[in-house]
Amino acid sequence: GAPEEMIAMAAEREVMFPIVNDQKAFAAAAMFMPEAMAKVAERLGESFYILPSSINELIAIPESASEGRDVNDLNEMIADVNERELSQKELLSYNAFHYDADARKLELATKYVERVKQQDAPNKGIDPRA
Image (cartoon, rainbow, N blue to C red; front, side):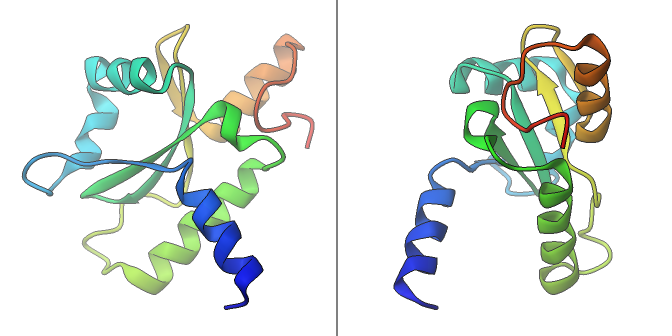
């Protein structure tokens, strides 16, 4: 691609952190381990979005790095990877998730956006009004 595209891709990679395990298999199970999600939040220093890239890997995006993105953009990224790079048995989900570090709560990113809208909380990360 054009140099601008390559720079944008490199910059984007710096805010995407893979979550894998030593076996490089079934790492997505970490989503359902509260202590694992809390540890990721601690290492990132904040709440984060999860892109389920496959049953073997998750990608964490810090909330602060998601400014200007819409949840639908994240879901489209997931769908694109699912359709281009994964076999049916490796596919985990077409939906982004959000982990709230303060509440220690994992939920669909769309549910998080709805919850923030209802609470009328200050905007952080993805614009919940989008």
